[in-house]
Length: 345
Image (tube, rainbow, N blue to C red; front, side):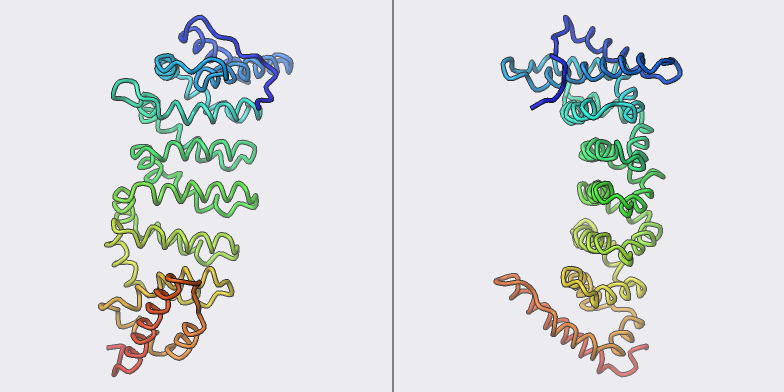
């Protein structure tokens, strides 16, 4: 059910409609709006236009959407620079207008005209718009709307690649720990999509930015915030254990500092965190080319580690059986390393 007070009207042509959308958005320019009533009227017009746009895209229950009209709508929106106006004015728009906009955004991005996703191509030519969406996580009024819009963008490799390689990407390490739970959770969902939707591209990014990325990521794994820590170790397991990241994983499990982080997480009071950490910890231990420093740590701590692992139990059924088998293999390897002469050599 829509709570809009406006009855969508059908414009004569798509071009005329988009021109009207553009004019209504430009009327929101705070440099030209001098009266509160004038701004209110402009906002009403924008809300009406977005309601009509949604109706054009999805139909109104009586009339089915016209595919050719939707294609024309996507073309005209790009031609008239409406996408840029939308993003720059998001913070001014009302709740209903933003809701309709997010709905339209998802469909228009996927709209192909010929062989081209014209709205995606527009964003590719105006990458700064993605930066604007990312930094909007700092504005809790529009953060969730921008998050939805960003995740639609991330589905497209070129747009995801830009965000990953931009200076804005580093902001996610801050946004996932914002005090507003809903905003922080939404930011983490977008962060996860960026690291899991396009495996080969992410592997290339991590290979180039390995040190800076994992330095920042270590802070999430050692966060005082339980939710951040739990989500971060789960996400690390999700993307690091994927085949495209095999070389990154080989590099990661040679790092003594990250081995120590996994040991710390293995001792966490949360069983959820312990279990997820185990699946990364086991790769460090099973590595046939363990660095001497890791062998020394295993040897010195083998009694505590073996005791901890014995007390660690999985779920039920087949998963639990596999976990118990893996656990026994890891315990045997820890015992083996502990009996090696001079493991530091």
